[in-house]
Amino acid sequence: MRPAPHRSRWPDMRKVFSSARIENAEAVARMLRAEGIEVRIEHGNTFRRAIRGNFSYRAGAEQGPRPTVWVIRSDDQPRARQLLRDAGLLDAASTVPNTFLASTPHTARDVRGDEMAKRRTARFRYGLLIVIAVFAAAIVFRPAPEGPPPGIRVGTPVAGPIDPSLDQIETAARAIFMIAVPPALAVAVARQEAESRGVDQACLSIEGRDPPEQTLAMARAAGFDLLPRSACDGESLRVEVYLWRTDGSGGGQVTWSVAEGRTEARGRSATAQRVDDDWHVGEPR
Image (cartoon, rainbow, N blue to C red):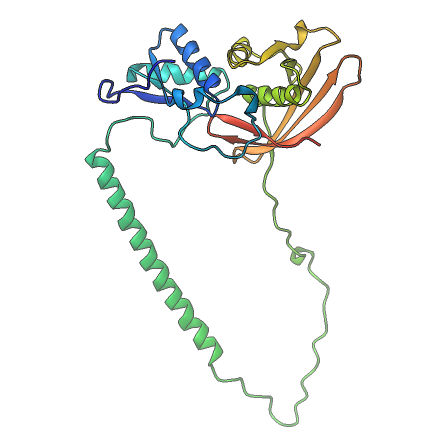
């Protein structure tokens, strides 16, 4: 493990990846170095002493700093991020700061502008509430209408046919989308199935196809012997992840089938949530 990068020596470093597993960070670093991109790993020594067998993707939260991969030259950041996207390890954008550089005066001006806009919005809301309160008071305290003159009978209104357009309106449920299964999520599912059976090898297919070679290489570099489904015999642990439903929030429900030996494949599903660069898969049912 290389020592953590000294920030004053590489002021243009850019953060591209972090993970709770030091093996994942080292695998990403090796992949980027193989493409000619110079990288450094920060907080690696903190996690080196952890025993691999005690780690689980089901953990909900981590303590302390996470192993982080930094690109030394800022010019290499776009290519590094594209490689991670191709491997299914990175989404389109990240809101986490990815540089050691201090914020510029432009950033401070933007913050002040945002605060002023918030104050203007708050004043507008207060004014609108005052107007609504005035109208409500006028309605509540207005004089009651006079009754009909004596001797005039007020007829009981006859109920007419109900307009079908006035039927009760149902609240629209949150939209759920079925999209392509992220390769990194499929690896997390296969790893969970292997760990639950006490084995370190599994055969994986994603929506009926073998995983990308880059995904297999990343899993092996992290200590998980993952093989494509087409290269396995009938005695191996076989996992096929074929459905991912999400509302776009980073979480959703994943569905897969699993079989081992000559047993018949059994369908399973679980909730899954992306936390930073890791996928956490819940208890299957």
